[in-house]
Length: 190
Image (tube, rainbow, N blue to C red):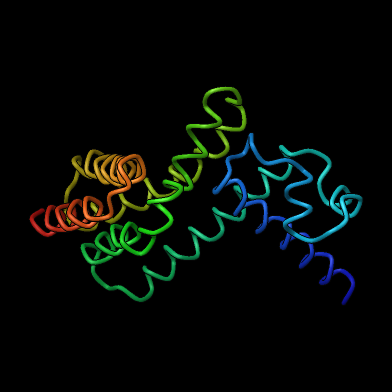
């Protein structure tokens, strides 16, 4: 049992390392060797867990989805009002400002990169947006927005992705902070 747990921890370490590298370097610019070196494991051991880079990406998407779902469940449990949960979602921009300035949004950058040459993989990475979209729509429905809930959810996704992209492009944290404040105000006004 201890060996199995150790193997799972080892695999998780590889996935966490690949996740970080895919975000900072890009999927296409990250090799098996890069991941093995960063994880500080022999490349042969690496192949025991993953035969292809696509398998690693699949595990990274699962890792990110697990984190997203856990975060959203925690917000559901700890923040009683849907309006406040929506503003907590916007707060991600502010909490991640430093990384966004340097690397952009981890979901957005991966989706754009994969959409150019790896559509099958891109459809898998799109699941992260789908989880957030469904959750945002549920929050707007809980606020009584009815049919507008879908459009509001897409609006929030579009604004946060646009802000992430332009913050990264212009290296402008003040822009990010202003736009996050505007989006929170818009949520308050609904």
